[in-house]
Length: 298
Image 1 (cartoon, rainbow, N blue to C red):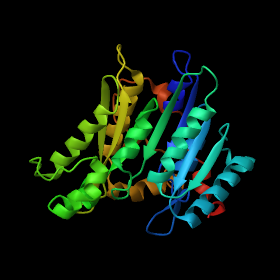
Image 2: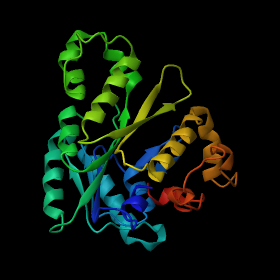
Image 3: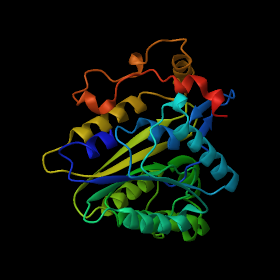
């Protein structure tokens, strides 16, 4: 959806970039051993138009090497049908240290006089991405897609004063110990409010609740984008995805795997009904042949 909007004839931007701040290996593994394409390959594969440059930051050196090898395979083997961006780079190291390199390089990569935009994906597994790093990315014109770990990471530490002076402070950008916040929801709303402050003009934050199907394990994915004067079909499409995801939980994963493996032919039963959106933003074919041959990626 993002690349369709940014490459459309009504877009004010000439170039767009992608930053995956916690990229991983390029694969995700389900508990039964099945592997699924991770965010770096999916972002490349799903782009309607290629990014000017894609940045993949990964803290573990072995994971970074595995990711680079998989991206090389994806971009150079026609069997996988994954579109290569104009340029891309895997950056091993701590994401909060490497983000400066990304910001500097985007300014360097920008064509003279070009207006550019960035999609920043932060898939926190805990409180990995510091608030100062959020602010550095906000120096660019960017949309944020941020995993907020309100239960397992933030929620487990809200009553620990030492953490408020340490990792919680780094994650939120300030010490919230004496701010009268009591519940996990209080902390989440504070984080969302702070995300709003990253934009120079009015913005929209769309939090999407992810349920694992297990007791007390959930998190939110928060999409932050600048609000437009006349509304946006793009935002409507993001809200459509929110409805889809929130109606889907860990208990549905087995059914979705059956769809991916070809044992069920359609995904329509999972989709929201009567959505008033521009369906062209949602893409087309539900079938993903690459997803059915993942042993080639392992």
